[in-house]
Amino acid sequence: MTAPDKLHYTRDHEWVRLEGEIATIGITDHAQEELSDVVFVELPDLGDIDVGSPVAVVESVKAASDIYTPIAGEIIEINMDLVADPAKINTDPYEGGWIFKIRVSDPTQVNNLMDASSYISSVH
Amino acid sequence: MVPFAGWEMPVVYSSIIEEHQTVRKEVGIFDISHMGQVFVSGISSTNWLNRMLGNDVDSLEVGNAHYTFLLNEEGGVIDDLILYRLGDKNYLLVVNASKIEEDLDWLQKHGEEGVEIFNDTSEWAGMAIQGRKACEAYFGASGGRTLPKRNGVDDLSLEGSRFIVCRTGYTGEDGFELFCPKSMASQWWEGFLAEGVRPCGLGSRDSLRLEMCYPLNGNDLTPERTPLEAGLGFFVALGKDEFVGGEALRQQKKEGLKKRLVAIEVTERGAPPRAGYSVLSENGEPLGNLSSGGISPCLQKGIGLAYLPVSSATIGTKLAIEIRGKKISAQVVKKPFYKK
Image (cartoon, rainbow over all chains, first blue to last red; front, side):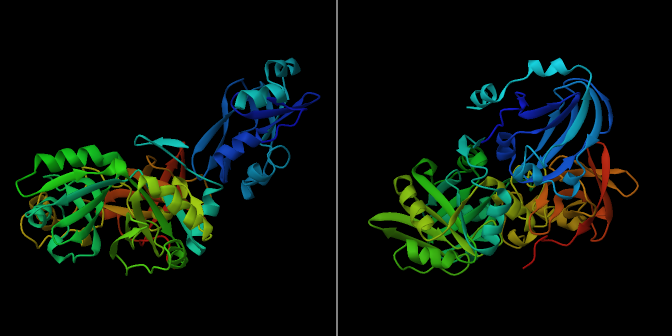
């Protein structure tokens, strides 16, 4: 599995890329390996959201997995490419497979998340 | 790996969809060591089994196997199994892992003189080799042997070690199931891999059987449902002498079925249907729940099975499946989903 250095990670295997006040969120390479064969993504609605709310569902052949937002704020964009090509989550989890973007209410929230090396050791 | 009936089972080796397509186009191997092996022998074994099981044991020739049911008095399914006739008075029952104890309790409770029941599950390993290249793989791995015909059983030995092979399966493809002493399992497994057979997990085993509408015990078959409701009346010999559950099934047939297990195909893009989801009429009236569901890798559509009232069970009936509060359109289709 890979876990790029510049991202923040949750115990639920989501990643967060913070650029200014915009956070992009997806699931990690480890998560997509565990799920395998993503066939459908239920994308979130736009709007305000609290930490820990279930916002999206990633469905593989095997099972449905809820995606929780690790950051509070306003969901401003969702990845419509996943409608036609949900398997992007498998093939490109950290770039083309992003799920949604949040305008964060407080950027210091990411300090509660793990860095890449802590995430990797939490998985092993 | 997931826990399954006391075993650690591989769900997927690489990708469920890839493993599925491997079996549909080439050949794959499944570890089925979890399945139970119960041997039945003795002077009264044939007559006794004929009273204990739904299918007609008298019509099963030595060296053949058939699909059959262990039924309760109400005609409900305790277990579905393959009965191998190894000799005139010598049988092997290959049963579901989760049902071994229940099956044995039931069989022993109904036991009688002249019948020996022996559970040898812990000594046997098993594998299912499935796909159009299964014959060649067997030839290579067994030192030049050929497979028995469809549903045929060979009870053989390799290097002095017994193995039983039956040309059957749970995928809709040509292939066979092989049982051997557990000490020989890895040698056989490696032998098949050396012939180019690819390992497949429980995930693709489930998607392959669902495309064929083969029932999964515990989901599609339960003690509350009969083989007639499941559309599997072909495997129950209602015309034979008295057998456990027979009276109830004859009665049910006379009165007519109230529910039937139907094949349902999703007709719009949406999340995969899964076991437990509600099935509604076109007008939103609840009709039942999916007993199985998933994505068909071959059809690239959501598919499922459900017991529905017969009035909603005809092919073409428009339905909806409720997925997390959303209704997606579906309809009753002809079985199986996958046709070659």
